[in-house]
Length: 141
Image 1 (cartoon, rainbow, N blue to C red):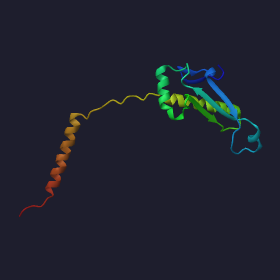
Image 2 (image 1 turned 60 degrees about the horizontal axis):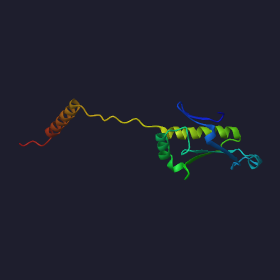
Image 3 (image 1 turned 30 degrees about the horizontal axis):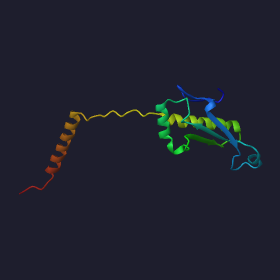
């Protein structure tokens, strides 16, 4: 319950399905980087989750296909902070954001038609313009 990840109001990933591992972060930071495990790796298997129904699983698997392992694991790393706790919170929020974005179903576009009056008005404007340009032509004497 402590590390449950709330994706949307109706979807929560249980703590038991999330694997959290720590490792040493790279980059600048002096000796602190060399002796503290502040990098967080979060792993969540989409195929075995109980948080999503079959339709939602299929959508997430399709949308995040390039980010998944062969087993269907979504892996998120975070090493932005010197604090392990902050990196853990960041990694879990990144995980939630990715899943939420993958679950988003865009609204279908409603086809619209140009009204008859608008078409007629456009054609009248074209006729007027054509007559104006024709009136500028050469005259026969």
